[in-house]
Image (cartoon, rainbow, N blue to C red; front, top):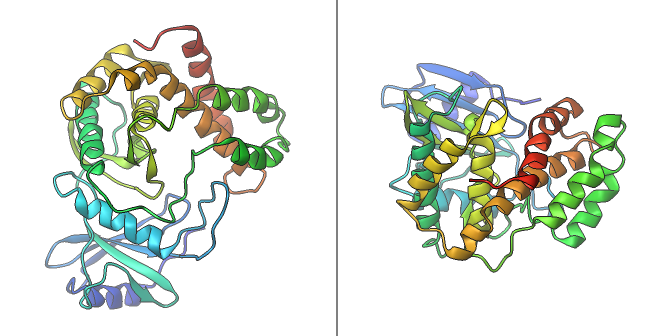
Length: 323
């Protein structure tokens, strides 16, 4: 359960970052990890994040473990993406992006307008493609090593073995029945590390997108960002956004790729792995949550939703072409 600061404490944080007095606070009560609020001041609107940081390192995906250095690298990357509608963090009075406050780290970025979309139109898919292409192009120029990042979908054989011990311990029969199928799908569709790599978002989905009408005004939640093949990010974005009536929609995929290619051209090898990247996106996403259910990090109900929505799509895609 998310635990927020008090109004008085948020006023103290606003003073730390020279935001001005707070006229209004809006609490975001969704999400698993970082309590965030939108504060309105006479200057403008800001998002304040409360981060519970750790120095621990883990071998497998753990949403609870975030280090200060990893978060600072995320902030540096986002501030590098100056031309994109992403969170741009501001400095405190002491010229820091992270301030220690009551045992937590706090950060502030400027509010991004817009609403989460209920459906994706071809025009919106095109804009998402342009965003991802530009993000990968600029991210490829970001030369700092992103140390300490959680590599959620770096499912190498050693990590798979560790996760399998938990994933196979499902108590729900529907989840238990798909463990081996999903494991095989992950292992069969891994994207080669030899493909062009750089920072990837891995979670560009409607929950993390902001639109005003059909105009993309923001992409948020870069908490899972790490360095891996760009094509995996392409597959993950297609998985979440190019669906219509429960199936992959070729028109949406075509418009997304058209927008992407306008900013960054896929290599011939990347194109040859496009279908595989979507399959890996689906199988890996389900697999990570099959691991999370037994350790009680995500509810089984959510993983059942993922299995019901995406596994039929993967099965169909295994038999057909993507485009």
